[in-house]
Length: 83
Length: 367
Image (cartoon, rainbow over all chains, first blue to last red; front, top):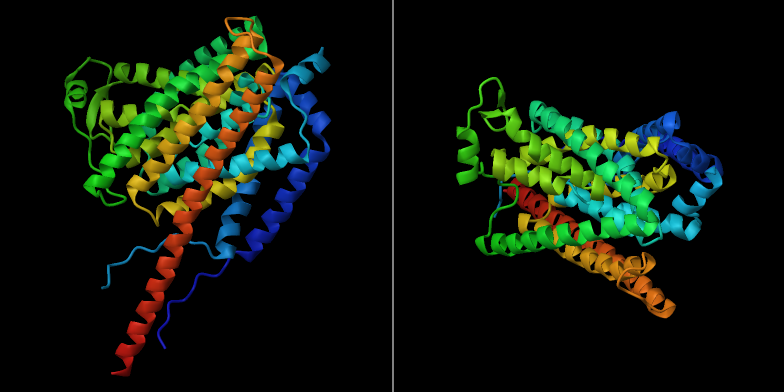
């Protein structure tokens, strides 16, 4: 029987980046006072929010990318109209 | 000293606030992914409706956006949609615009405090959203009547573009692959500068950047929106750093918004493959006009706080704040429901089609 081979779902990526993402957000929420202090100091402390943004974007971006694929929500495939 | 700054600039984030910010980020991302870019116009007002001062809301929004823009730019560069030369050149003048705009923001904050800063940001929103929102809705209705198929982009052409292409200033001419012509770098400077200035004011520069690349420089829409991501990254990184240097970026806000936003942006982008072009514009215009009403309602409150013109009773202030928040929330919910509705309908239709196709193939194999 002919059947298109489905793309394997990225479970490994989902799991690894999921755990990392949860850890990062846990640290952020539980250390709010420290984060607030670093953010308000300004000057060279400006590197703190910038680097934080990059790390979170990378980790959480990879997690969400895998998340929708694992759930099976995919873009519509391009095809010729069949009536 | 630090304590004072903390109290006035950074709000307390409890569970309810955090969930609201994640939801706001999700809808902002959903709309961003759905309309290409610019969903951040939801985020600044939503943060402000929680009581975050205008300047901190703009700074934190910018900080969540620029790494996302980098990821988006790299992705779209792989599809050949990014004109890096145009992005970097416009990005340089946008950077100057951001620095100038940020200077104005910080001056206003220093002189008139949080109320002045919030008033300035809200006024900018009301003006920009009323112009852009009305135009986008009008364009959506026009596209619907003309039944333009989704995903089709024509190379723009008008008198301004032809005029810009005809100007030749020796020593400043640069060939831009996306436009396919040589254009003087000097002509891109005011466009980039205005984009950066707007980004520093409301955290969304794309409202000027994208249309100016299409209707003034003559870049195709798809390439203009992809190139805007390069500009957004360059000016976003510089602007965020400038605001962070002065201690205005609340990275907790940025990261909570990012949490929802990255889920939303990918779902929104998937959604675009299931709907027609006018639907995207319709969603964008509708949300813009609802957000505009929400921000407009807060203007008398800020004027009252600044002790100019309006003198409101505490009761009226309370109701205006609640109403503004509720309308903003309605805008978020409306955007969310329209996009998710279109997505679910599209996926169902696609599944029904695939079932029909499988049945048809099975029938064919029998004979």
